[in-house]
Image (cartoon, rainbow, N blue to C red; front, side, top):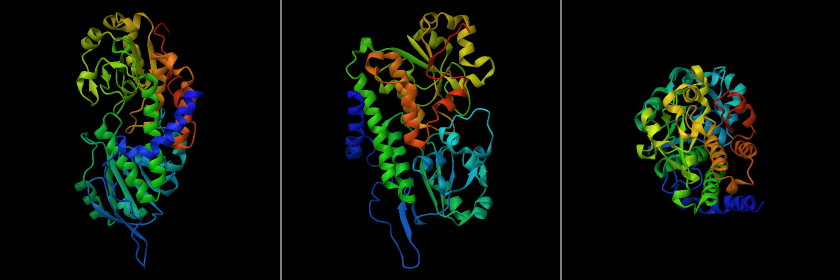
Length: 389
């Protein structure tokens, strides 16, 4: 109970200090004044994530979101009722749905008009027919699905509708975290939800601080050697798919054996995994969509992998996929508490990972969807994975 009280206090403390905690200097931060207005109509002029000056109707009544994860940010801000059209991924009836926001509001979005294909492949004519007040557009920097000022300008010219664009960001490093904070602030400002944007940023910062505080001071020799495999990235992957900068490992002071491979998603050599021989292996259960259970099947059947210490001693655990149409931040945070509980149970004695996950999901999207999400993967998330079954 004492740790929970400290955590709750930390949320409010960090809310006041958030500009010192890795989200300073983000695009749009300078836009702190009240919206500019005219006598004829209320408008807002803001700077988007690519330093473009954009004037929009304010507050907007109808918006569309283009690009991987853009709609997720609007749901985080509580703006799902503003959505007037969606890309085609929102209209698919998928057997496995790994996006918590879609589990919560998918039926609502499926019934809306189409704006184009997923990953930002917009159809300007369809958007014009919907006539939104604003188009939000995002994508992850350095990927095939990134967006840019040029992309935003082109879409704005074709539709005649203001386009507010920004990089999506991530929690893998400070630069990408700054992009995430900037994206939330820009969208929050554009929709009149600036206070909610700051609340989200403060919650993320406070959660990361809580995880760090619980595991701070663990001597390096006592920090667990870990690996995460089967990491989803534009689809399901096998055991060699990993995240060298997997945020949950960073936050709980675990030694990621793949850490020397940079910060971007990576496919490693299977021989490297054998040489590293991590004490614990975490499996992104999105891999179960592959034939023979993906990474789990490989650990069961590959003789080279069967010699791994974690395999021989039964230290294989499932975590939920968080790369599903870009980063689901609520799942990243929830995974971190499960990872911490497995590696350092005494420091997470007060945490029930499933209950903590629902607390996090409720904060971000308004609904506790852990059970629904996990059931799609045979409830193998947040559990030890047996290789003898």
